[in-house]
Image 1 (tube, one colour):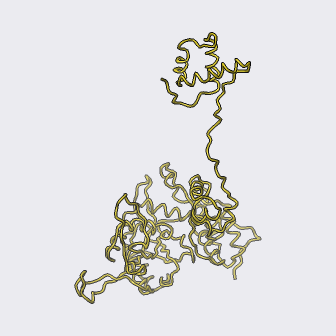
Image 2 (tube, rainbow, N blue to C red):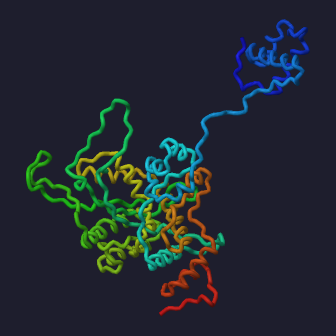
Image 3 (cartoon, rainbow, N blue to C red):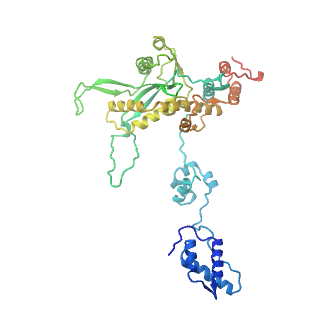
Length: 457
């Protein structure tokens, strides 16, 4: 017997079936085999045809108009709960941190709130604490971003002049493990057990990382990866006592507990500068700008020992400071350290030597394309800083770099609108008259009206 596999019969199909049976019937009885023929034609059961036939005959015998339309008017189910968006918006952020907390605050089931998030009605968001900026910090950040622009005479536009001679350095503490780790287990597997005397005693090492932007040829093939090095801030001392791990007198690697200017100066002179000289491209410009943050232990650019080492062997290295409270203006804080730690956390380390080896291997595994993408994200962040007039109240921009790489449209440097540059220069000339904007105006080819001419003390 045929069995309906598609949707229910439409009203037109029901009407045609009943009309066909009336044409091929006599004294209220359908022609022999007609019901089975229609059931096969419409791929339904004989009972479906018979029910519509009986209904049509009954209506005609009562002198009524034949109406065999279906009663199904659409899917029915439990009514959906309309999310009270205004109520959710009025709640303090502390009462909507989790699904359980939000559901209890608005007296709704947790599964309902989860469905709202799944459907995109509510958005899950994670916020991070950012540095608190003073007005001077904002002005310096804005001035720093504007100083990275120039007017491209070939393309006739303002864009970033981020050269391959820019080197970013930064120090970062890397822990051997996290206090809490998440993982997926198969059913019945033993739960991983980790122990430590205290979370304060988790093994850690500080690293000084150095990188420049990768260089690509005209055919987009890699010429230089820009990965200069990542150096542990450690020292070796002989073991005082015997232990199950080593004999007395064996050299043991120790991490500096407190960094001072002498330690940072030694790393700069013995590690950073030699690695730049050794790995710098032969045909590359040796006029190098080394950018660091404003940590107190860092040496100054006018240090005599630094100047002597940085200007030897044909090199001319300058040490500059990034704006205060501006970690997003350094590629290491912007994403490279996170990329290194994501790989490092996959490999357990039992001692400092293993941790150093794992971190160095993780840095070697990061593809140069990812390093170049972070440098491009740095430019996007500087555009956001300019639009926010130096503030850090913005979300990290997404350039969809992977899609642009597949399409072959990923730019080397980002273009900035002339209106934005003019607006930022006008703003700084009004509120921060002590900042010299002459060089920036010359680079970008912008002239302010006479009413906004700069005055300096």
